[in-house]
Image (cartoon, rainbow, N blue to C red; front, top):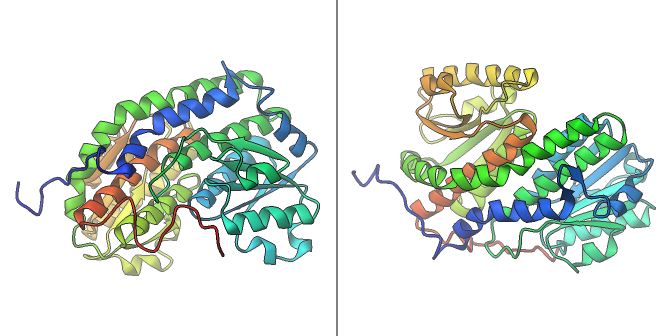
Length: 380
């Protein structure tokens, strides 16, 4: 292959980021083991959370960065499964909002380290307002784990690379389980429905483990075609929009390339003017054929991709295996296995992590220690 088209290669022995991407099946397995028993939620593990949320019809989520993107996915899952109204706040903004706009019986904070300064301040502000609090963190004994009324610990293991990977996917798992818990307790989901969902969720670690080598190889081949890119637009709908935001953040963090994310339907309301030779697009266009809403979103995304192809805009598309319609309109496609709409984000985000990883390698950067960033932001 020529230098311009040669695949970029990574080595998990020298790059912690790639190692931690590959650790995600085990991290998800360990998180599930702590909160699920067979096909039911572990009663003891959820006792504290049940106590905090009892009688609550509104939930505020406060988080920063990657954790906030997990919260945005959780917002949609919880609202659709349970009917509980969820608002997701930037942790850095929550303390400065008026009391009468954010009074709520329950506040959930998310932080990988449990020490993030903005999020810790939000937790303490919520407590001072008389709110009951829950933390989701990866570090047992962290300040947030100690100070919240209830804590859900992700079981991602120590995360060393600056860019969050396995801590994000385990946060998604816990938020998904929380949506099932609330849906069941509010009578919106039946016991068989929860059991079926948990059965599907239990398959995700093996699906990811089986897909990772192929995703890695495919992304290493695709990345050189984006070598001249100066900026990216990431697009997704509904649950997939926060994943697009996470993909854009990962790319910014480790490759220093500007990237923005929008809901897919917003492209024509301004951002489309940015697309061009130096500004390609990344589109999440997966589908769950058993879900009519998912298929409607997919059809709209397919129409957009057809227009993008006519404009000769370089596009990277994340799609579902077996989708021949996408292959007809896009060249740079990475396929993820079929699963339910609610679980697709767990599969979509990992190719985007790999995309950011290989873009960083292509530029000769230190992917594990990007400039100006620290693992835990402990000062405002």
